[in-house]
Image 1 (spheres, helix red, strand yellow):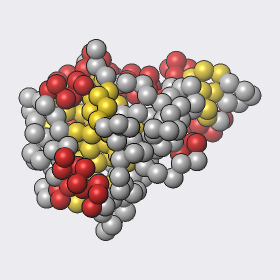
Image 2 (tube, rainbow, N blue to C red; image 1 turned 120 degrees about the horizontal axis):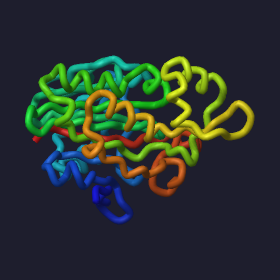
Image 3 (spheres, rainbow, N blue to C red; image 1 turned 30 degrees about the vertical axis):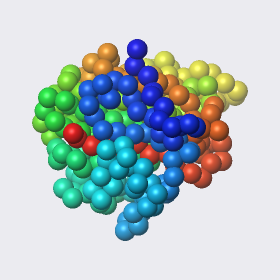
Image 4 (cartoon, rainbow, N blue to C red; image 1 turned 90 degrees about the vertical axis):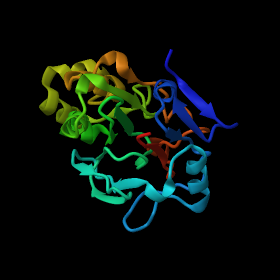
Length: 249
């Protein structure tokens, strides 16, 4: 069974068992990981302590590529040497050893890897990005770089779950406009004009729509809001950031 593999005690970060078994250098951090800040060009998002931890995980901090995430569907090509890629929510690379980083505190960080075509993409996906089609955009970016959608191995990092993600009428209307009646499958009615949103199921469905094999989607369904001792949650008032980083071997 695919699962998160904790690293350290308490865990400073996790690895996805499926991606690890296939040999992808990667981590998804907890609140115990040192020295991470929200990315903003030209400020690097990792302190010296974080860089040391990345090296220990087989990731080169000198080549990490990151973006100013804007809750959209813009696709960015990571610079060959790493560094700031621009404003957007999808990063891609075909360069070995260039780590791609996505920062979250409730949103989904999605990693997409074609082990045969050697293409890597990562995406930042919240409710706005889901409505704007960022999940399909991430698959399309990987395919445009040479991947095949049905060859992608996908992992969804810890993020807010349907147990804790209450949305209001404007968000309900946005989902209705984007997906019509289909969106009802991702919603559980709550108090008046509110619902609980299942971003996990929504994005698994959208990945499958884009051609990803559902059997190759790894989602531990670990809710950030349910584990304040371990993870950061914007909804719970946390200002810290989790980061998911992966690089082509």
